[in-house]
Length: 383
Image 1 (cartoon, rainbow, N blue to C red):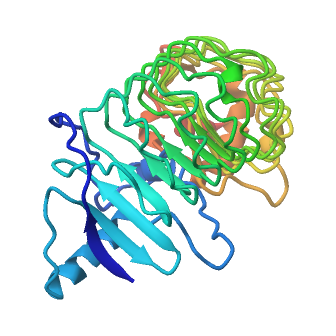
Image 2: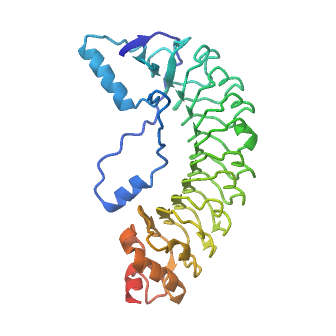
């Protein structure tokens, strides 16, 4: 294996990009909870032969340091190339020049942090073995319908932090192997189910940080393998009743940071194996009594920072199963709880699950007056 350089085109001047720093050491319970509740972290299965195409940034930097130690000089105007028996991995960041063509054995390509509104038309030509493509932190406004056709083996497409307002129909016509699609932090205000036609192996779909106000019916109807759906930090006020019909075993559902006001009894029914449910930071004032019915595998529930004053009796029944608890915890803090007899069912559940409760000191009664300011757990234990 080896590390080298690869010449290419000169991009327009780079813009300042928001690079998220690595997480620091977490010591408090709430910090640990936030880390656990972070957005999806995909499982990365190895491809035949043991090759794992998702080359980590840390490993890549270590390889570059090793190359420097061996006397290899890397020009800042060249892309960095890591070669192994399994193929070439290429990383291009300013001030490097974007290559006009790629080695035929390229399996990993990152072109990030450039001021690109359009990609070179021939960027992927001849790279039919490409499995992972990272185009984050550019200013891409549109993609050609034919853009992905030269790379039928692509498994990961990361378009985080661009300026996309839509996708062209037919974009994924040759993308039957794509399992991860990240459209995080673009400018999507609408979403059409037809944009995603052709995706047959999708396991992770990240649409967070856009401006979506509604979702089309049947969005996930053909995504039977989907494991993670991230719709966080949009402007969704309602969800289509059939949103989760299609996936056979969804594990993570991110709906935090929207404007949802109600959680109906049927939305989650198609997903009994859901493990992580994030509803924090919405405007939820009502949760149907049967909303959690059948969630037999739930490991984490976040309902914090909503408008819940009470919940119907029986809501927690399905979550109180023998030999089953929330392994990763739950959070119902920062809600205006009215601590009266209508919360008796919740009190019993809290007593049984208090060791799994996050933000206990921030889970307090807003009323009645005699209870105002008391922690919900203290009231529950006094019953």
